[in-house]
Length: 103
Image (cartoon, rainbow, N blue to C red; front, side, top):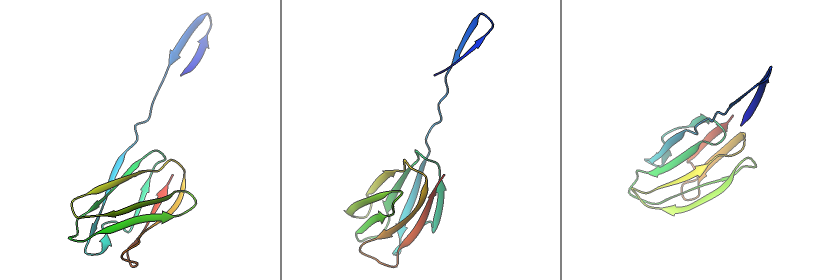
């Protein structure tokens, strides 16, 4: 909360920024996005639209994660809480790669 004093009056106000949610599919052994630019605090849902398992992960300094293997129809999510460049890959299909830029 911020406070601003004007003369003898005290005015208080607060503000919040809503985090956005994004969905990246996995279809035909590819991510549906090759790159994505998001804001700090945003969530990315990784949805498996293929009939076989995927294992989405990142070893990037800005966000390290491993979602584990998950089947068709399932989605797993990551909250990106730090700015930076994140390389995202699939541990099962090494040609699957994308970049997420967090501002």
